[in-house]
Amino acid sequence: MKKIQMVDLKGQYNDIKAIVNPSIQEVIENTAFINGPKVHEFQKNLESYLGVKHVIPCANGTDALQIAMMGLGLKPGDEVITADFTFAATVEVIALLQLTPVLVDVNEDDFNINIEAIKKAITPKTKAIVPVHLFGQCANMEAIMEIAKAHNLFVIEDNAQAIGANYTYKDGSKVKVGTIGDVGATSFFPSKNLGCYGDGGAIFTNDDDLAHTIRGIVNHGMYERYHHDVVGVNSRLDSIQAAVLDAKLPLLDTYNKNRIEAANKYDNAFKDIDAIETPYRYGSEDNHVFHQYTLKIKGIDRDALAKHLNDKGIPCGVYYPIPLHKQKAYADTRYDEADFEVTNTLVKQVISLPMHTELDDEQIEYITSTIINFING
Image (cartoon, rainbow, N blue to C red; front, side, top):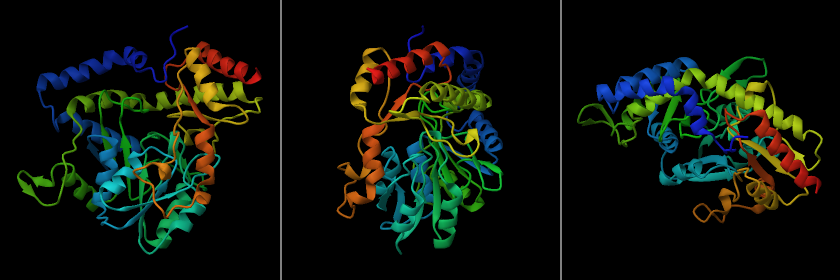
């Protein structure tokens, strides 16, 4: 059996190097390393794939979120509602811009931001909602957009973990996640479903004026060289990363399909184990693209299980062990522990298993049998 990896980037590269290497070599030979032709090619191809009018590449997913908020003109003191159970990047950009983060609880089943908690958190100072499509599962965007419309709020989708997922509306129509709100942001960190070989990110929008503003922000506020019309940052996707992403983009649907198939195999192995709750899915199968395959462990010592898996050569992760409202950087006397009942429970239960495009049946069988044997004693 091959060594089990949490994410097998080397295995993936070996399968695609015949298309990736020439794409990288083309950039090296034309020496257009910043904002070169490959960046524009990838931008156009991603726009077509997502069905969105504007993709603005940038340096990383965290920048993508920050620049999206800058583009919307949010001001210090404006309140931004987001999920307590997520990676810190979502809330740190809110704080960096001197906006006021308002953390709320998530759903027990799909781990995504809770609709009733959003409604409860809205005040006259609320200006935006940032739903996170956690672990690859779409948040309830239809309900979120209804709330935003009723209260005149912006919606910024944190799509760092769900690139390629489809959101299915009640009427059965579908749209790519990240293109529903006023603006979406994603990360191309190497371990993402669509990952580059360094750092990278992008911003999506169908708003022409917002896209124009964001294009200036990512490049020092310039629309014409040495003319700085807005306060900007230096956040550009370099051409080599764009070359990697453009080579991999046609494979994204296959990659996501492989992840879904691996998740199905995990689900089937665990279906009769009472101590394990497998990831919830709603709607069509492609609503969840499994950036992470995350279990809830009940009645069993989760940390002891994690140690056992590591001892058996099986990597695993706990995403996330500490709620954001309990992190020193984001603690606030406004928060009431009673409002975070689900998050405070999840951090003690969740464990993520290896999930990537190269997982094979032998590896999945070893992983699942090791877990089941541990639970059964």
